[in-house]
Image (tube, rainbow over all chains, first blue to last red; front, side):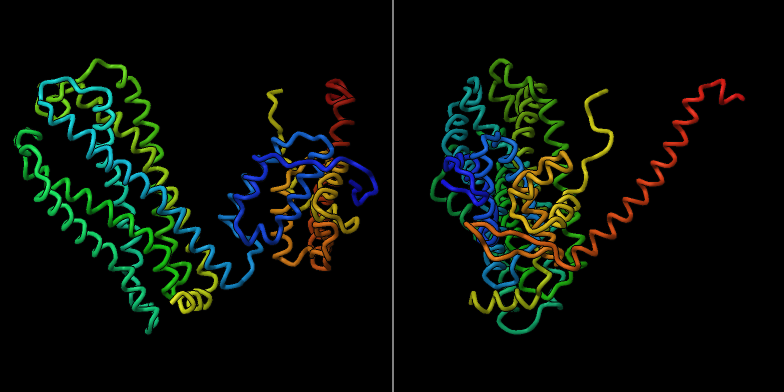
Length: 341
Length: 116
């Protein structure tokens, strides 16, 4: 192969990892700089230079291009792609996590619990219990997101222009409420169609409190998840200034930091818990005399889900940041909604 | 020495502008040029991130692509921005060099010279 400088070198293949790093850039970037970067890598490989640092540099560059889109073309298509990417980044991991927790909780934890309160919990049962209890932590994280996202967008009703965009925006703001109602309905339906052993037997004689808490967790989780949608789409629909959203972004960033600290602290505290002897189920559910196992397992649960929550909070911060960047062109957001209708 | 650099690496944007001041270049040629004159290796993410930011501000512009890659060149605004930045650096460099020279003379005299 003859290169532009006249030299003849072999056509170098770009490794898979480098191609993945190139693929991590946003679409508009790949369209504009993708070929240039590909050629850069080919020449780098052709000169037999190590590609490891280049791949790392590309990965960092891809994150930077998504957070600070310098040079993004001011077209509706680019903005629409950006909105889609923001929503996907914000919600897909959260949905997968919730489905996983829900599945484990249904099939493992409950069946293990129903075996009887005095049989030691198996390893699988303990993992399932972890997942079940971690739902509480997810709910707390989701509640923060709910307050940050839904409250922020909901407080700016008067700024939303009249017309189709306003109707769409109102639907988005009410989505968490609708989801909450649906979730309560489904929980009640599930309880009436699939009755298990008496709640009193499972939860140490506190059926009402446990049921209410269980439903409340579901509600907050689903509503919080949808509030992330609202932060992105509501902000795009409304005629907001950057300064209006700054508080929300800072809150989300603060949440991320707090969650990260909680994750590290929980891991450090609960790291030895998994090596303990099997814990009597009565202790696990809080009705036995053992205090330490109960505290320990809660700690390990906190460690697990704090990591997930921290990730979620970081995603929220990034998403809110994306919404801020998107505010550069309000007119474009309106155009986007009209095209999307 | 603890292995950490006392001073951070020069700003990649300044290096890219300085390189393009010598004529239009594509990404890889730019990286090699910077490596030759500044002894700093810029990766592809850094090079094109810089070019994107500079292009957005109108300091550089892309030329017609050749062999699947765009050469970039400095614009008039880019030349002005580079000149201003270099003037500032030059001022710091000349003052620092002058003072360093005086300090070296003082140190070469030794403690006895200092007392005298």
